[in-house]
Image (cartoon, rainbow, N blue to C red; front, side, top):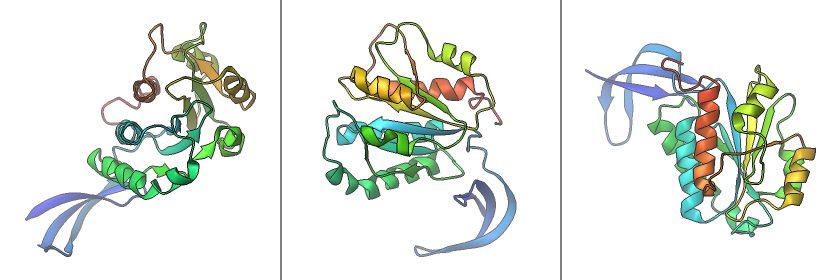
Length: 216
């Protein structure tokens, strides 16, 4: 008999003994059902500045593997793509990329991908209730991610990280984000590409919150 692991998209995984398999369908007996081991306890939403297709899709794929649970494309003042209507047509492709990445990394749920929003609408898309809100900013000179996490304390079940475009955020955008509760932090003395920043932020945050531990 062959055994496979199936994910239900609701945070559970099941071990199935296959009884029949064809090009159209498969059937079998559920042997065991457990919580999906690949699904994080911390719900991270990434607010990603809209950019070139390949770069944006690469961030979706890799950050899904690392544990992000939702993505919001954001049109910033310096975003390489300013046409939100055109981007909305790509939602189906984006969601397919995320689904495939979730399956590959044995996630229990498929992360969501929202329609693009203007930076000015950021407050409306912010997480309701207590949530950790962070914005990576190359001009921040005082606080690292570790500093912000220490000052914020623990106990957060969800959070948002805002990643800017290739040209960086305009100062007015950082001020507006801070007014919405986002805390600026630095990723160090080196200027990172936005896709590097997105993956670095996701990995560092997941590590700091214990999501990189085996068996979690």
